[in-house]
Amino acid sequence: MNRFCACLLLSVLYYSLVESAQPYFPSQIVFSPDNGVTTIAVDEINQRAYKSIKMSSYAKETTYAMKNFPYAIPDSPQSKYYVQLLVDTPPEACIYGTYWEYGGNTFNSFPSHWTNGKSFEIKNYITFNYPMIQSTNSSADEDYWYANTTCRTTSGDIYPCEEIYFKKNTEIPLRSTRVARGGWDIWQFITYYQVISMEQPSDELFKTIPEDWSMNCRDVMLGLLYYPQLTKLELNQSVNVQVWLITPPHRINGNDTVSIQWKADQCPDCFTWTPQQLSFNIGNFQQRQTLTITRVKNSLKTTLLPSFIGGGFDTVPTNIYPIFIE
Image (cartoon, rainbow, N blue to C red):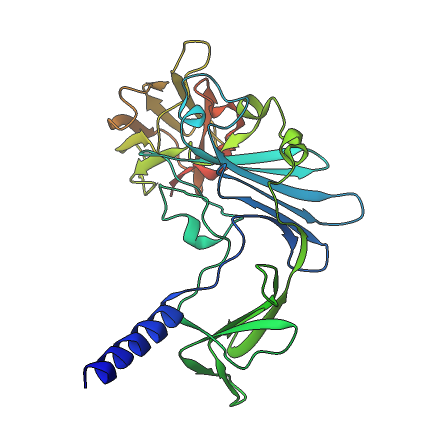
């Protein structure tokens, strides 16, 4: 009886371990998921990642992610926290986001499970939505894992919701499948992996980071908030618009102040506003300041557009932060 119980316990432990072990990519890998169009480098150990997409025979889009980003302004959030920098060439245009208390990002070139908005960490490239089971009936050349749940496509086919194949007895990923929605329908999508390297990604990949990015690339989180942003004004009426910043301005050469002025793009002499300029710095960026707008002449709909001086706002497009007046 005791021998039977011991054998039963060992069996339960064995199958529990088999089912709890999950398949992963190597912690350091360079590969392509689309036959060379895209190259991805992941370095979990040194917390850096790289992604390059060939847009044409001469153009490409490259994204870098890491903590303590090189060439950052000393003692800036970008020098301390994770940054994701996207560079398009040619012509060279670039944007970036910083993951910290007042930051975040409006784009993400890497797996979604690496970020939850304001935080970022370079993790394993792949994650699964279901517990994965290793097949005991794999082919002679492959190791096969499949989800413990099946999914149905629009055509009625039933597959494991997720699958992944590795070269036999190695960590080399060959392909993976996932049943997901594509447009109006549900399909099984297959991704084939071309592994370039399974060691520390070359430093040469990261030497292409522009040395002037912190001054010439746009911080996508720099911007304005208004309340209200849309208002209707009759002749000689006024409205108080509250203005504040989304995130702190940058400190450049010891100065952390951004000065903001506005101009009316349709009818310059139809409105007056006071004060003529608002200023924000790291200490007061969240404090709402009041811009009082008065209609002095009838006109059609008008837009007030800001202009910026300092604080890293020089690269922020003015047309994405309008005040609308009817």
